[in-house]
Length: 297
Picture 1 (spheres, rainbow, N blue to C red):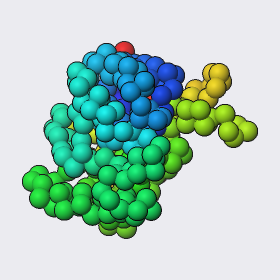
Picture 2: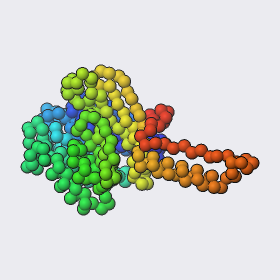
Picture 3: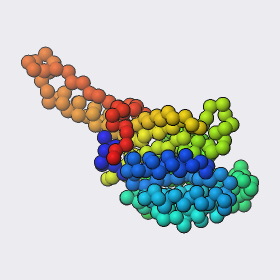
Picture 4: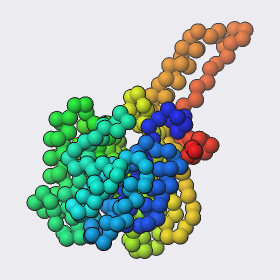
């Protein structure tokens, strides 16, 4: 079970949008799951204003590295504030290595409150242009990254095949996609329940975050916990652990090979003491039994 002791645990949050409940959830999950570090894929505030900056002081209290890429609601001043906090690691066409995992990230080139872009491109072309610039940077990396970070996944296909895993946000809705060239794209929902936008739909937007479990030797994603908390005063909490597709496929292959080996070395079904062997397999995305899905102390 990768959730016990033999995995690197990473908390993925995104789109907190200045919601105090989102910051509290981040702190609580980091402590309860004893994570190695936190990844934030942007929109940590709502307007990018100086008045919002004091909320970011709590980054230093999380007690673990806080890896951050800028979202389209985060100004450069907010990025600088994050960078000034203890334990914070800001990635902006740069990379870092934590607990053996190599992580590369790029900031969003747009600043939506002012309808501006940082790379001089029109709003609808800014992210694809930034992705191409980021791709050029990734190609120079040795070793290649284990994880890519960007806020808006709209240009994910540009980076497909350059890393096993890409983490993003922006959509306020969790999704997982296996891209054509092998990269797994994991888009987190809004850890802040979309901020004030939670008031717009009939049903409150939930607070969402994920715990990712990486193998310490191979650095491959083994499993992940999808954590969902009811928004706007709702108290329902749902935790589902899922096996990463590639890890599930490898487990099925190993089980199949073990079963075949056992069958070839065992007596036939009509011989004394013989019997047909049966193997168990875990399909990709199947929840692990509830007893192993929770945090550890």
